[in-house]
Every structure is written in C-alpha cells, then in structure tokens.
Image (cartoon, rainbow, N blue to C red):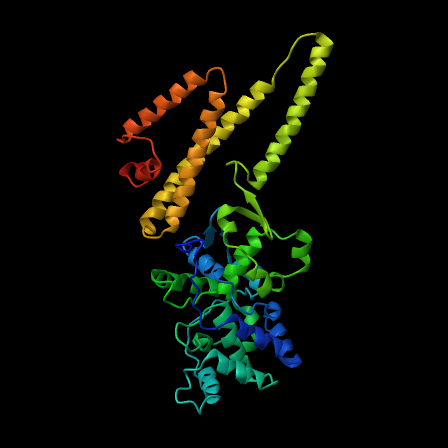
Length: 414
C-alpha cells in the first residue's frame, strides 16, 4: 500500500546497495570486462543509468507491490508483470536452467582471499567491492564474482545488513555461461519471498527486492512512451535519475497518467483510453444515422427518429457496466479494508469512492430536476434511498453509509 500521507509523504525506501554503486561499476569497466559482460548475457545491464531512487516514489511503488499476482497498483494505475517483463526491462538472461542452492567453496574461498586483511572477510560493504572492481581491468575470477555480487545486490536481491548479500557465491554454474540460467524467474522469486517480512514494518526495514525493476517497470508501463521512442530507446536508458525525479506522485491519484507530465482527469467514470475511442466511434455512427434519417424524411416525407433508441441502448449498456464495476469495487474495498485496515490510504480511496458516488447522485438529480418530470423522478430517487437505507438498517443517507456497508457482514455476500 502507498504512504499514509499522500501530500506530506516523507517516507524513504531503505536499501543497502545503492544504484549508484552499479552505475559506477558499469561506467568504469575496461573494454575486455565489458566484452565479458556482453558474452555472459548481461549486455543490457551496461545501459543502467540510475544513480539514486526517486523518493517517496520508490517507497510508494515498492509498498504497492502485490506478491500474490505479481502486480503494482497505485490509484487508477495497475501493472501486472511476469518473467518476460523482467527480461524486457532489465535485460537479464532468461535461460532454461533454474538456480540451485549449493555451497560452492571454490567461489567462496577465492572471493574471501581478496579481503584477508579484514577482520571479517565475509562482511564486506558494497563500497569496498566497488573499489576493488575499480582497481583492476582484468577479467579474472575475482572480477566476475565481484561484478555479479554488485549486480545481484542492486538488481535482484540486496541485504538487510550493512554488508552485501553473498547468496550468489552459492551459484555452482559456469560464470561464463550465466545466460543459460533463468535470472528473471530468480528475481521474481526473491521479490516475493522477502516482501511479506518487509511490509510488516516498511519504514524501519531495508527493502531487499529489485527496486530498479519495480520502479522502471511500473513507470514504463503507465507512462506509455511514444512507440518510436520505445523502439529506439531501452527502458534502462530512458529512465535516468533526472527523469525519475520529475515524477509527481500526486498524479497517481488525480488521474491516469498517459505521458510525461500529462494526466487524464476523471471527470466522467467512463474515460478510459478504449472507451474514449468507442465514444468517438459512437459519435460518428450517430452522424451517419442522422443523415440517413434526413434522407428518408426528404424522399418519403415521413419523420424517422432512431436516435433515441440508439441512445437508450448505449445508456442501458453503460449502466449495466457501471453496476458490475461498482460490485467489483465493493469486493476490492472489503478485501483491502480487512488486510490494510490501519493504513490511511484506505481513507483516501474511501473518500474518492464516496465522492464519486455522491457526484453521480448529484448529477442524476441535477439532470432530472431540469426536466418536466423532475418532481416525480426526484421523489422516486428519494424513496429509493429510503428503501436501501431501511434494507441495510441505516437511518440516513450520508457519506459514511457506503463505507459502513462495506465493513458489514452483508458486504461479504456481494
């Protein structure tokens, strides 16, 4: 879930291995080292262009991750992802072999030998490894292990301690053939395994999942970059630190983002991209219908009006769709309230939901009140409200009604 105070959000995502560490390593690689990175399957990692994570955006996106269905949901924006998305966003190898935990003493002993002067050679920070990488232009076993440790700590799974995670040292495969293994599945596995512990107290614990993937994947999907830009520019190149810092988190709750800095305001509940296109096609169809009716009237001298029937048909379909959507909202609100009852973001969404329903009622009453049957129709709606209130044992129709119903036992049956 997102932060409890949207406009006063000061939460920062705690991570040990900073993205700048990987950025510096990539920038300082020698030609032969870069060639090895390409040959072993990590060519796209050379495009990594993030020096720091945007805050509080990174915290919000990470907190909104759902390990059950591999998705991120913020405001009206929902992004589902899979191993293919990991490969497209980070460019990690997606081979056929899966990782197997085995204690590789050879890799462990060689790696520790670099830090024999340290009191605890297994407790090494990312900065120390970055310095070790910077001091050598060779492609030896030490370089390969150091590079993979930095890569995995930043892109796949970090550490909760001040020291790097050495989990990759248990990798028993050939370091020159990393492309044979499924690093994308490994990333999603690590992400899901560690999230539940972190979410218990996210502001106090280090997040050890893949922050670069969550942030870039979410933004790359909802921003809908122009196709020619997407074809010519990889996501890791496009999403620089500067571009990430320009994102305003308030946009996620004021509408659905389509392009950088451009937000669709949800004045009408039916303003999605696909429905906007449908409305345009309907308008064209209405113009054709009007022309046909005018031609018939001109040729045969009889009035023909099918416009009302078409409008009624679309209105019935829209109301049916809204009814189904409202039922879905009831179920989602009920589930969210049970799981995240103490999170104030529920109140933010609750108020939006209530306001949308109030606006709908005000709109209907306002339109009907302007017609010649306004008195009768308004009375019918008032009676309808009373009937619903009686059915749910409420004494008035106020802002809290919908939310009270969501928390009731009846909501479970919806």
